[in-house]
Length: 259
Image (cartoon, rainbow, N blue to C red):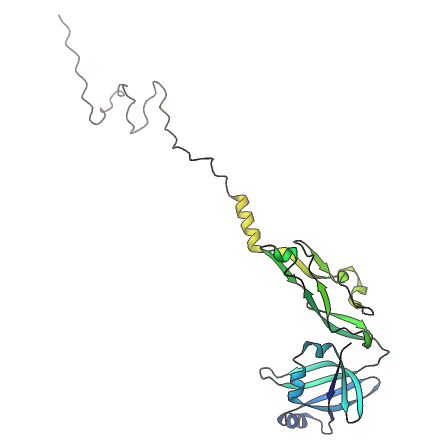
């Protein structure tokens, strides 16, 4: 459990006009609620808070809000940012009790992906289906992150929520809702481009062995007339009424019969 101390001040003025004046003065309007007590209005110095929120662990830590000599443990529940300026517009904090379980979204940290069998295989995609998960635990057991070791991940492997190793005292309430809520966190599969290439190679016709010589045209059967426009076979008489082949000597006329 990480604890971060933040100095704050009570805020007397409320309403949109008061909030605008605070922002012009480089302060952030905020509210603290929960714990069976009335909400109170707070204000924070903008730049120190902007710097603190740049760290991932700020969102999964127990925050000690210090007002004078009083300290209140809380967690961040909501934060509104300016649409395009680097400005925090408003913050909501919830009081917590050391004896009551709280529900928080905790990020996953994936390690050893590059040394895994899947990470070393060309064309394999390692998809991160989830980047965080809602957990239930006491404040003392709240982790900053949940580590998932991918060193044994292979092509075709899927890591589900139920397979994630949780710190002691931490549970995932989603898993109690049924098997259909045991969703995938990590999937290792072949890329679409690689699959298309393999399919194309499998569908390609096999090449003939060696260099094939051109196939010789078959000679016409003995006594068969030549194909249309084709020359007669060597030594064969031209068909009746057919013109002699180009360059061939005309046939001799038969000698007259002796009387």
